[in-house]
Length: 407
Image (tube, rainbow, N blue to C red; front, side, top):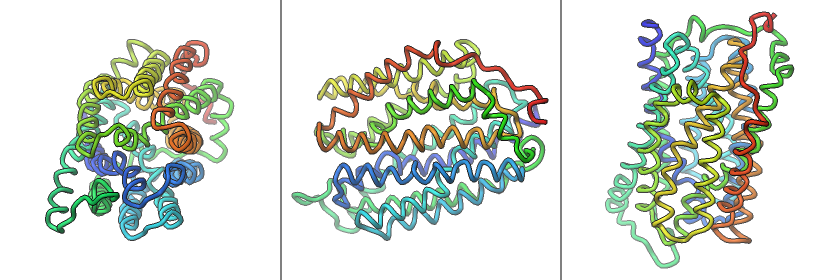
């Protein structure tokens, strides 16, 4: 346990820096596409769908390579370096086709980075106790929060330095393309930090040829993947379009920043307590809480135009993250063999962020154009409430596979 906690520092630092980069990308990329490049809502949805579309192939590919070679940490470093160059390339392109192609190339690497990080983290922290993953993962939330808070101020400084001002009919944040340079720089630093990640022991365990069939035979895994497909379809598209939703209700970039600050401040204690939540409520209970919280959150957003309701609704973001995202990773890690850890996490991301993400982003973009900004939130929220209520009948209690399953 002491040795495992000793390895936790580079893992936590990697989470902090890499998620800091995502703290710029996720809150503002859809806003950049919609306002600064002039894409329609449907085009924004299609560009965003490039990430999960490519991830369908890229994530299981890199997960399989990592499990077969045991080089999980080295592959994570490579993916992070490549992602840094991909983010930088986004600053140099414009137009729907160029943005879609560049986003697709970026997705080859970046979509596999987070599931690989989860895989490496869970392996390194295997003997550090049930609370270790939450305590390390929370540094990613802190890095995300730091950049959500600081980036708008940095952008304002760059706008003043370049003499950029908002013009009638123009984007609310001219020069927003500067964000890609910051994202690329932080991602590059994360890759350098990744060089110090452990490479031996459990994290270097190799799977044998054909071991993936264990996952196909595991009914708990298959039912969990089906549940993930539904949950991410209902919840993910609205999350990507959240900046556009805020702008449609009269908010600005500072409003988006304050929303994210509220979300992340509340998320921190829930992430820290994710291990305790798993022990108290069980994997199914934790997942149900996450989906139901997301359902309440988006239903409230879909029913109102008032920031007096929209603001407090975002406090449910932390429950959704701890329940669905972290709870899902912990549930899956409990039912897959250790040698298939990267493959399992990659498949989870492929199904949730990939297959469900394509459908969710495209549907949300279409609803934005044809039914208004509130429609994706109301429909997604109602669906999530229904799905969350059915968790006890969908998900069996996880049972760890026996070592014979790997033979």
